[in-house]
Image 1 (tube, rainbow, N blue to C red):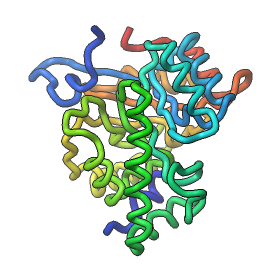
Image 2 (cartoon, rainbow, N blue to C red; image 1 turned 90 degrees about the vertical axis):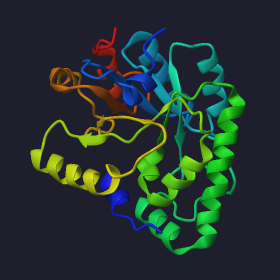
Image 3 (cartoon, rainbow, N blue to C red; image 1 turned 120 degrees about the vertical axis):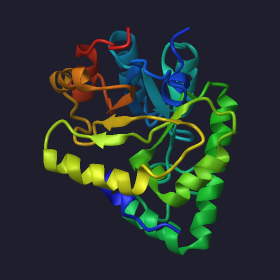
Image 4 (cartoon, rainbow, N blue to C red; image 1 turned 120 degrees about the horizontal axis):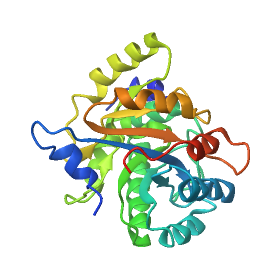
Length: 264
């Protein structure tokens, strides 16, 4: 998923920000966060996310604006202040806030090439990002982090607009960590090279994550694998990405219910 986007052409708890931007010299500062995507996508997703937080190890969730269950998610988030809520920007495979449907549908490559070639599509995305941020701000929920659906914020144009949209005093963090995998060392090397080429040179004015785990386990996270890599993590903010979809036999929910919170 991230590979598709990266190759597209361009035209009282310790604050996360302190860990990433102002790490004390010589100190061993490490934070691990279990984050769910797609909060607001549907009632079943909402149920799974809040259950994973209240009864499992989930730390936070990315909220999608303008989706069928966004209003319900916002109401439940206000009642659950211990769940860290962030903005999950969506520019494909979702219901837009400013137009009836996405011209590129569910395809990250089509979206990327449209943004590279079409001023009209770039304006559409500018308007959509502004509308989604305005909608998020109107909820009154603190924005602890920013991520995106299918990681489209890695696209250079989307990244620039996102950076211009967020306020200068934004205190959350951006999902920008180096992709890590639970298996397939060759894939680790490939994605590591792409990260160093496309993402590492970018200097955000905000805090960013250090690593991102879960790209090779979408909707299939395993608690044993997660626990095994925790001792190998050094300083920085390490994000483990989850997609709980429903109560019951959902793999990501089962994983979160089995894990303990490493920062507690």
